[in-house]
Image 1 (cartoon, rainbow, N blue to C red):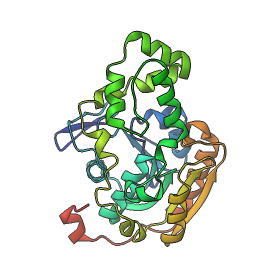
Image 2: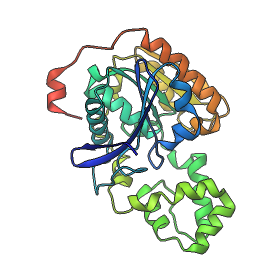
Image 3: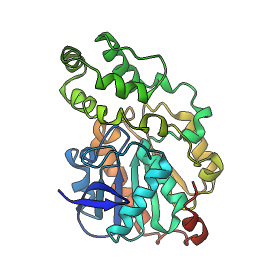
Image 4: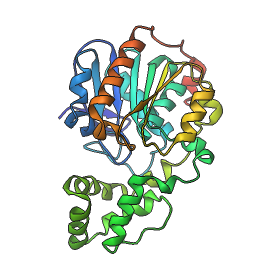
Length: 295
């Protein structure tokens, strides 16, 4: 199992293929297996040198007590990029992984050739999406847990979710499995290791990735919004505010395009990855900003 030591933490990663660099960044509460088991990594490896990794607190990577904002994780991504001696990379990010990818593009522009973002929601634009708790995925998980006797409030609260899952009895886990399926239970059982961290709070912090920072993105940006996205207002903001943007719809998907519409998602990433890779190596470096590491 390939591992990297970065700033005192160990990160699990995998690489495949050759060509321009492309980095895959999974969602919070997920891990890099989303790219492996869906065959997305193999598809992209036909054209690219593909790197996927487990973010801190996820998969086989270390889970420190703190440091889960998009700025923190963008620094992890920069460390991985440097340690693996990658060239200017196209970064593909799903959900919170899209936030991390975008923050990396803002902080370290010379590292990022382009962005392909899957159904992103940005904490810095939270005022545009006041009904986050109405997301279908959250409603389904919450309903299954509550039906099994767990107590979750009406609002999205990952800190509470992590602790509730850590405290589930065997009977409650069995009920969840019968309601949501075995694969959903396997996903759920990853969450307790985050219960003693600041992840649940950190991932909802803007961490400096404001609307103005988003407006200033220079790299080519592709936003792949799911057909049944909950983030229409965010999509409209990006469409109106980011200069070099392309927006497409992933048919049939409900925030989990890499799993729910794998073929369509893979084809769109491959198409736009090829296009971006032919456009050059991105904007010039900004040494002062990189040296500061400011969010």
